[in-house]
Amino acid sequence: MADMLVRLYDLPPAADAVAAVAADGTVVRRALVPERPVVNRFVATHFSPWQAEVDVCFARQPVSCFVAARGDELLGFACVEAVARGFFGPTGVPPAQRGRGIGRALLLVALEALRDSGYAYAIIGGVGPAQFYARHANAMPIAGSDPGIYRGMLR
Image 1 (cartoon, rainbow, N blue to C red):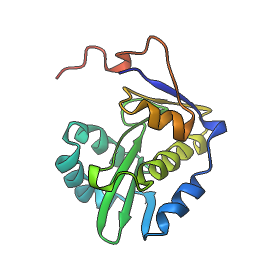
Image 2 (image 1 turned 180 degrees about the vertical axis):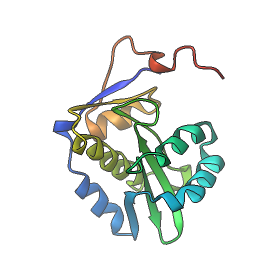
Image 3 (image 1 turned 135 degrees about the vertical axis):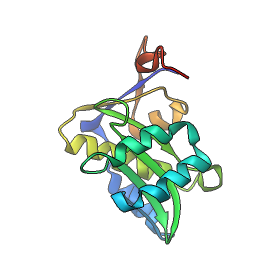
Image 4 (image 1 turned 90 degrees about the vertical axis):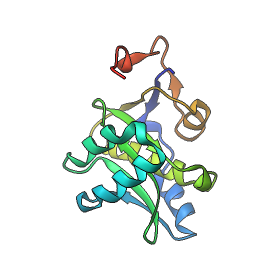
């Protein structure tokens, strides 16, 4: 899976995506440190290969994990700078919640956080849904980036 590059200075506004999901009561925001156990359980249940990366994001100040929730129900997450500086991911929305704009809102809020930290570009590492990232963040494949930073990773 190749990496993708995002021009952070050319992002669609996150506010529109956040407002769209807010219509059904979904809130997208930066996670709080005390929410770490809740997010860890969610990731362990739905996206277990990414537990270590999400955990790193809660050790950062400010926390570099973003969540989407409706009431007390966690609907998805997105992280930045878990594996390397300027990287987006991991991110996940369970299948039952997909197609509602939650992933798009999380993506754009997280990418805006990178932009607000001073980055002009972000890398989405080891992309699965390339069409999703191309459509919602104008991401483009990086030639020769497979396996990229994950080369030689212990499994």
